Length: 267
Image 1 (cartoon, rainbow, N blue to C red):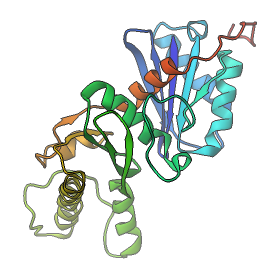
Image 2: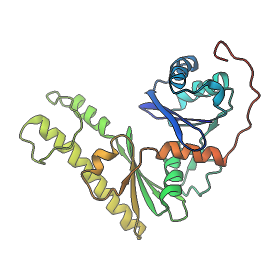
Image 3: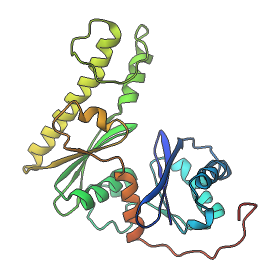
């Protein structure tokens, strides 16, 4: 089985794929100082709850936009699952060209999204990922990654508004029925939600105009369904795009299976 690890700025998602289906997905808050043993205590309990054992894991792939977290995630794979993890980087075999000025600067999540979205939906595509940042990634007909746009994430914007304006409260995100808010909180909710809908529609329109041909729009990330309700430009939401990209990348770049030895009390 494959252990896929998607380490973002807010959460680390662990998922196990048995060759046909995802057997489980679990997330924990991202903390750069979290040790491999801390990850292991948490993850082994969840694996056991799902009827899985550490010995079931034969391969591991890691995608991260948090370099400081990589060391302990590698140690987790090596020490607790005896796998040499594949780390998603631009120099690997992606099966497509990365047509940007500095490929190594592109976040692994953006390349993983491009890989999986082209595999599932074909291009041309715009992939919108609602994460800590809201990213718009452009994929050509042949799967080539052409770049895109990066905007502040919704939760970052809410927090910045609260921190910078003394009289504005911290609010939750939701879809307001009216654009005209008749009190402070509804006005903030309108500005955040409909403002982001305007951002989505405006950037998609500009990208399509520059590209010059019809493009599908796929959205992923926890807030994708909420914003898909407010605009017709998002044609499909897919929560598994990044994990699917990790699985496809691992299949394209096999790593040797290490000889297993007894390890601690979990063997």
